Image (cartoon, rainbow, N blue to C red; front, side, top):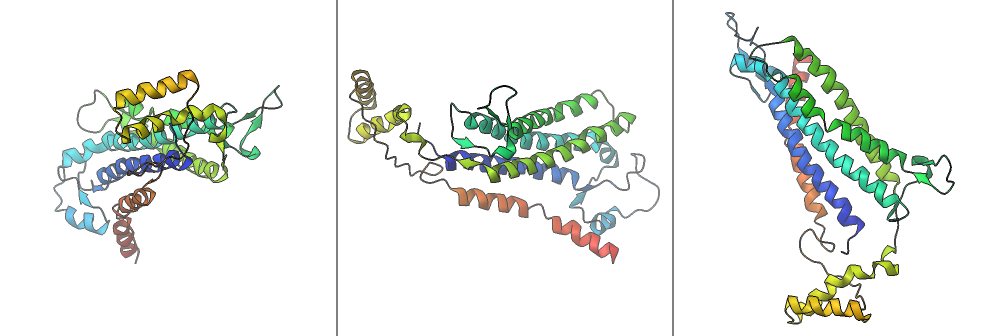
Length: 284
């Protein structure tokens, strides 16, 4: 089917907006004040947990003190789901880059700085950056399962296993940040190859356009399908490469501005300013 670089690239932009919904959910789960829960059962001191919630810029608090302690492990798992979602988007993007950079496709070209040569084939350029990005992000996708197994079969309260969540999650966050930086750098230097559809091997991409053309002229789809199949069989098929896709999200109407607006809206909803304002007031 006819496609475009914009259609392919925009798909990943929209995928990132859904990933950001999960990141936002994880942020809101973590953005609750647990202070005052003591050993998990509260305190006889007359604490004002509402005050500390406001002073520290939390969105709200974990009200039940037992649950405040039960969020250990659960919060990490929620963050891990968001990390895995982002990693999944980057992993699929990296796989596409590996595929589209290959000589059988030739849709994209990676610069020499992001590839290495073969050990024996002088014509070969290995997409090392994309392959390593794919490997690292595939490993990150296992994060929710690793944390789920670590925290399984535990009753309420604190258990020493909880300290192990940190050595799983914190390096993963650093790894994800590096993967995002790598993907950004790679995409800045990718070259998009043009004129691809001029190659005769892609002439059959437009058979559906021919069927649709006949349908719009009043020919039933079943008959149009058979007619184009006959044209292909007897060699009379001639592709019309002028495509006119106008619906939302198609080649001719990518809706990139709407996707960008959605990402901006999601980022604004994090309300980082609340915590930054509270921190500034405390320091002053």
